[in-house]
Image 1 (cartoon, protein in one colour):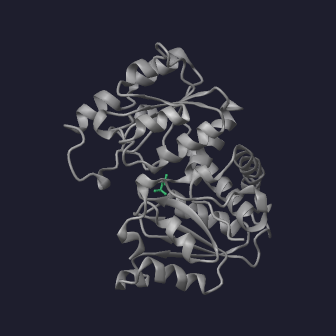
Image 2: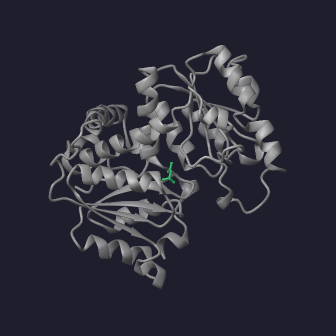
Length: 338
Ligand code: CP
């Protein structure tokens, strides 16, 4: 049976809990002097990154290596993609080498879903366009659970460039799967179309106004964690906000806002998936504060990706579901299949 991780919606609560429990054992391993285990000996994993990455690519490579898999990194530049080879031909070519998993980052939403139709090996979505980034959501959940315990009823606020964020989409799904309360905040220009119907169906709140949410006013209630999202200028074709300064004033986690949060809950957590635009969506004082778990997220990334590889390549068949169709609003573009 072909087994993939394309969307956070592929995972039931039991799947997520299994993966996070495995990640906890993997995290213990990470603290040992000798980190290598033979779990995936004889398995081959290709990390194919058509978009830049520091955290995801290196953590998948480390995860595979620590589990004794043979890992190979490919990027668009330096592969035959740069000579015009289609995604389909490239995917089928590496699959023909009898690899066990293809970890893919691609700029087209739905690209991983497409590839999964063409290959025999497992496909893991390492971020596809503005669609999803399921392993990021898992590592964020792991980080939150390590600090907050069970996420049932915990209030997580996600702030920023929602329109271009695959991290936000996967996080809402995984956090809701784990029973958290979620509020998402963005300027109207960066609030995705269709979010009203989605938020009603999945039971999360939306707001254009950050301060009342951070202050826990009205129906919002006290905040347990704030996840700041990167302003993705590389995906913006027009002006989504007047100036960087105005964005920061309205939606940045400034020193003053951090003080407000801490005054209400001294254990509040600050997350950011990275890379951070310091001084734009997050002030250095917040990024480097005692509340910040940004580096914990990075550390969890290796353990969680080891757990995902384990469940897909060596684990229990029932641990990851096979349904992975992207939502219709994020269907693969022509470019993905070319
Ligand atoms: N969070 C994240 O995906 O970071 P990278 O782009 O560095 O992989």
